[in-house]
Length: 255
Image (cartoon, rainbow, N blue to C red; front, side):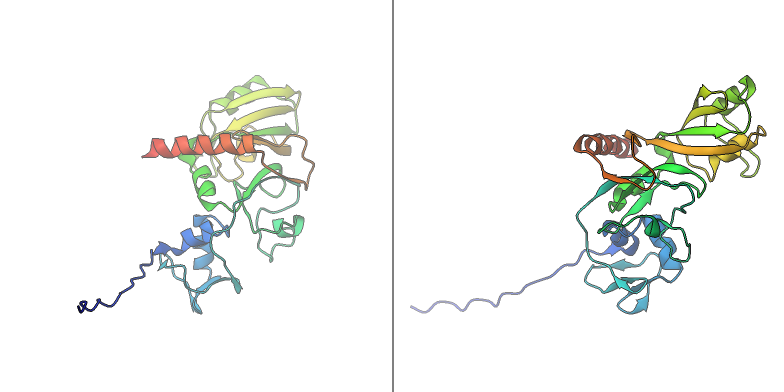
């Protein structure tokens, strides 16, 4: 008995196209926003051609950043780092004192929430671009706590004014109300839920105070603790679990 001929098997490969900035973020190169800046500045190429903003890729292409190949999604790492004073929050080599010269780590990471050159303290470093994107959304009101020293004694007007929100004349914006606690004659703790450019220094300047030392000691549930300037540590499982739980709660609230 003859059997009917079998039909030839046909295989289909379906590639899911994703935005290039998300691919860079998932690979731990940078956040999506920073990825767009890198694309705009001509630092990214796709199959030998300059990348364009908004372009989509399959992941099968040859992606280069600054002439170096970008691999696919990497194992995630989450670090706490004490940025020393004098280090600029960038990995750009044109900046002499950048993060790349300040520390060495085998996996390429980027940071969530910059500190200016003259400030020190806690930076969260990771190759988890989605986490960075979630943390950087101002509408989520994530807390960041700082210890600040100024050039003269604190008074009631200053403390109440800082807590109530300060109109920043240079930026033409009023800051959100925040928690301010005096911890010395010229020292206070301040907890912010936004990250305007040089915000604390500008806030103090509106009251004719000059910041002499500024240190970030907390980002959400992550504490600087006993980390010395220049030191790195891996987040504990408990820290990471709580951090992700808070971010997941934010994500659900946005839906």
